[in-house]
Image (cartoon, rainbow, N blue to C red; front, side, top):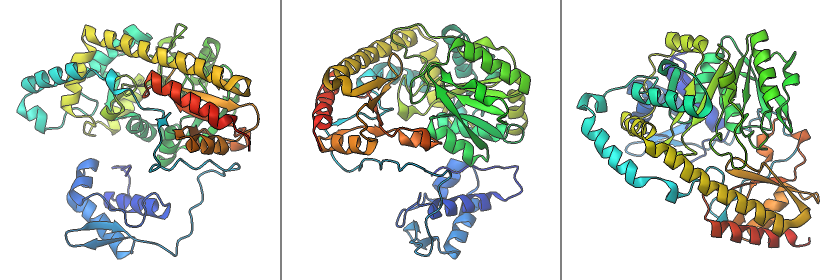
Length: 469
């Protein structure tokens, strides 16, 4: 349950909690019979007093949104009188429904999963023990800096300097509990001055959802063969632009060096902010990476974002954000009292890892393993599917797109794959202007599968998509 609180808002905190939960119930995000977190748990999550949550829950009970039973907590009620909430944006093309989660499949091409064999469990266990030995009791039970432990911020700054050419001070680095948290924090910082954000279309859905919840206006910008259409920013009214230049999500385009300079010129001329999400920069397989946008601009215009989820484990929920001096000041003035979002123990372990020679060795090993899987998946797809399908987004990242050249829709492709116990994923949800989407493409992630599973999965897809009718 994702709740954003604005402590400087005139609206009391308990009203903000009550209102957002009520909206989730009305929108169907919280379903009848679903239990809310305990007052103690939600208070701890939001870093507010327990009475604040109890007041919010009490109002929800009074209005009939939830019920309360002694010893059973709070449960969402059926609201038969409420009609469906309108979508945030008109959907001109019907989106393929997500595959039933309870349905068993043999091969799941889910994006974002990693191979558990790639996690350095022995090293992690050893460094966790060492970190526990070194941490003082007051460090374990208290709140650390909201920006994150200084030692980890220093190691992140060093790593970015040598790997991506990003020169920054530890004071500019924020350690965040995942990309979604980082985006929500950034959205709150941008809203007062940069209220309109240009978004790649298609693009990363979490960024769109979080920015919208922060009250930012969203402006869809088309994606071309060499990345975001920078020319479309002129006259758009955008105060900021969010881009994934190293491996555009989901199509895989790489923003050309010419467009990177063009984007920086736009930011300098308009006072705009470029948000560079470099989420897949470590995974380039057959070419050298283009310099990051942040490495080309030492000024005030670029926010650089990255994550450790793709390298270690999504379950760790650790990302980082480098703020330009202008936004560092905004953070220090308005958000410095926020508590740390990542545990001090995990931060200390990561500090040891990033500062050791084992980090670079781990990167090489994981990148090599995923390059082999990528190459195998591309080869199998082209051999099995022939000229009936096109593979998109090659040579980088942890996923590929597969497009039907025979006009088959994504719903049909997903349904036929499930009939063979293979799960692939829709692309329609990544579009804001869905009238521009051909409706004939699915997404395949591969990092969490073995090479044997990749071969078997593609063989089954060939059977499923080769059938008539």
